[in-house]
Image 1: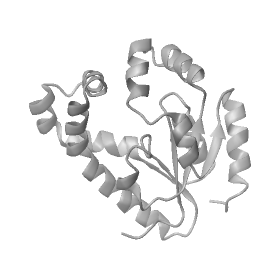
Image 2: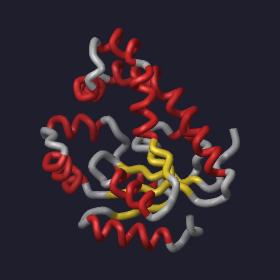
Image 3: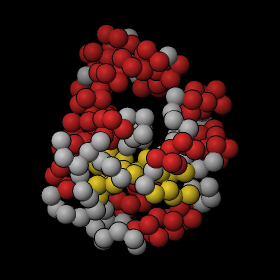
Length: 191
């Protein structure tokens, strides 16, 4: 499998602002492969298998289970990830042919880097732990226990900093994030 030349992964930890960053890049005219959307589509197509294992298709209930139980998480990933990866690859291949920069939103890119070796460059949207916790409790109405279950299931952001090609700081406002992204955009070719 060849590497994608023009694709750049947008990633971060839960609550870091990755989705906000990806949406802003899309609003600036860049194509965006949305692995979360692909995941939802694959999930919907496999409801029978999901119900037989989890007894439900309620994403919130399944999320609570998989972040509390590594075996359940591995089972769900084995069911969904190969198809998600194949769809991400196909979309990236199509976009790469155009020869313009595009972005690929992959929340757990570093956790699944072996699956996405065809995408060697990544922007990490970084926010300090305290900021992430406050955002998740306030905006997503998560309990601190839920927040820490999800954070603990991910590679620490400090470790991801050393793996990223670029780092975008997001410890302030949406306008500050957009300013950081605009500076980054100025360093790459236009969409």
